[in-house]
Structure formats: structure tokens, C-alpha cells
Length: 116
Image 1 (cartoon, rainbow, N blue to C red):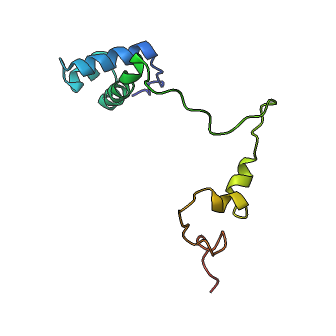
Image 2: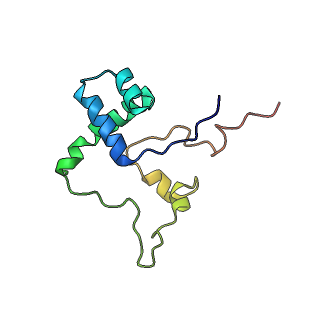
Image 3: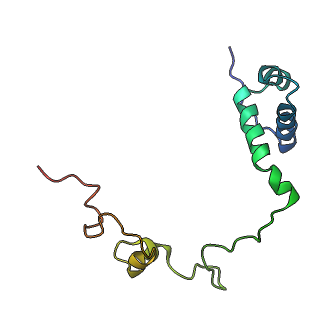
């Protein structure tokens, strides 16, 4: 038995299969045989179609601003490492009112085993 090469399906094909699955006129097994794809793919494409269906009519909210401020030269305004580094002063003030577990311990105390 020869191995079939991996197939890349076009967006139009995926949409056609997903719409056929949403209609519900045929079972998954029938659709899989008709379009020569695995039923799990049909389920994934159908779920993706239903998930993104509301976006077709536009969103009611304004688009969110990017999480990282970018300077005019295209670099982030603050270093990513500095905001997540254990010794960073921003780390303790990032979430007011939330107590961090193991705040008094060192950064590696939870991950390393003690020496025997």
C-alpha cells in the first residue's frame, strides 16, 4: 500500500464541506466519503465556521489596541524581559490586590529539588 502525499485543502473547499455539514442533510460518514476527507476534519471545519460566523456581520466593539506600545522605530517601548523578570519592580505592582503565591521565595525554589 503506497502512502498518499499530504494534501492542503483550499479555503473554498473547507467552506464548502463545512457548509454541507452545517446543513445536516447528510451524515458525517457520507460527507467524508463524498469529499474524501476524514470526519474529524469535517467536524473541525464546521466548528471553525460556526465560531467565526458572527464576524461576517462585523463586530459591535471597537478593535482592541495592541498590548505592547511600539515606538516610531518599530521596537517595543519597554523590554519584554524587564516586565517578566523576577527582580523587576513592575512585577509586584502589575496586579494590584492579587497576592502571588511563593512571593517571598526565590524564583527557582518551586522548580528545583533540594540536594540530598
